[in-house]
Every structure is written in structure tokens, then in C-alpha cells.
Length: 161
Image (tube, rainbow, N blue to C red; front, side):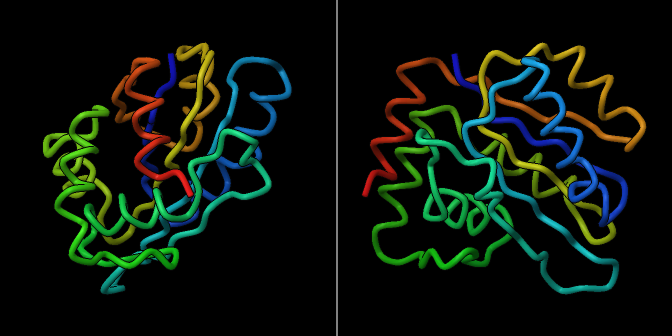
């Protein structure tokens, strides 16, 4: 079972700080990180800055096209070099099939706002209570959607090269 999680932090620096925590959790075997990206939204900025954590992305990484498209849907801007064009409607429909629906997008859009940051993570084998406890000092809030193996495979197929 793979999981797409979004950890929201109460400050623009929170997601960047949480990267070290995430690496430690992975080394302890408390989570398997497949791919990750951060969103940092400074107070007063019109749009957030994003970054894929390529040093954490393994062979199963979804890549910049996935993160760019997802962030484009959430924040209304294509990010990480992914262009949203005429095919976006078909791809957006495919995202619904893999568990990323309007509810998820609207919740993230409402909660990740100027003055906050977020860590977007594709992972498996997480000991959620241990991960949550590790992020507690960063005032993190977990927003997540579980993906079945079939949904994860469909997601990879949608964004395959």
C-alpha cells in the first residue's frame, strides 16, 4: 500500500526543516520514501515556491511532471516545469481514479496558504504515529489520502515517460 501524504507546517521554514527529520525516520525504517516535494509559501507572496526532493527520490519516483501537475491543480499555476495544456482534463480525470480527488485538492488548497509550508510525500510502510510524533515539534498537521496498490500503479502509469 502506497500513501500520498501532505504534512502542513505553520511556518514557511517548517517543510524544509522536516526534511532532516524525514531522512532520519527513513534510516530508522519507520517510513519508506518513494518521492517527495516541498511547497514554501512566504507571507505576502502571491504564489508558493516548490522543490522536488530528488535526493530522496528512488527508482519508484513519480517525478517532476507529477508534482508539477498536482501543484498546478492545487495552486492554479504550473510548477516544476510541467505545463498544463489541453490534456489536463484527461489527466485530472485519471487522478480521481488514483485517489486524488477534488476533496483532497480543495483541502490542501485551503490549508496551505501564505505563511505556511508543506511536505508532499509518496511513501509506504510508514509507522504513522512515530512519523506524526517526530513532526510534532514542527507544529505539523497531517493531510493524507491512502492509495491502494492498483491506484499507485495507475498513478505511475499516468505519469510514465
